[in-house]
Length: 314
Image (cartoon, rainbow, N blue to C red; front, top):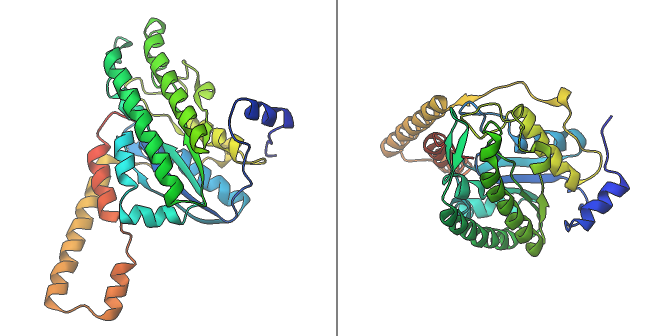
């Protein structure tokens, strides 16, 4: 049986400063934007089902789902990258149709400054640089949310928080980096509240020792159990009666970086062949219609993934 949020729990959410759960969007039109957590990067450097996929799956189980897209989710993206990604004409068209948007952005602004030694369990960073990065993230998140309000006026926007990404580090090494991530979450929550969006807190579901959810000491990404926790954190704010249960988790179907790169090369070869054929034979009106219906993100998405996935970032 699906779990529901009690009236007491709902009241606590309100007291915590988050907006009340909106009425479920029916039919749902869900777009996930942001970094590799939105894309579904695994602890083993591949792409599989992430929290956004689990959210879409659970929505489908409980209500009509018009469409779902994570075409605007790219591993390695900083807040600046996310801001740039939503400003293309293709992104604007996609976002204008959405009524649910999740945003994962901010961790890469900070974590790229962290020096992690997995063998020794050591963490280090420059505090001044981290403070500068957090300030830049604050400004970009504010702009992202303002633009989303204009681009997707019918959408409920959910800003996803972050978990502590280094549970394998020695306890004596965790405090400083954990404090920076807490500051990032505080920034995301504040900006979400000011923009009328909902901040989704995931940190308490992980804590600082969740080695079972972030199993690779040399990687910051969660396994499917971690993504399940993130999806269920979202549903605490979305509406009653939604929960991704263990029996509903999909079978692993990871796509490696090499496979993604091969897909990119095949796409490029196919596009090149079609272009050569078009030069030899003028395109008919019907053929032009087929081209216009093609996914505008296909070539760019694979190119970004092939480049970005090699980064050990969120």
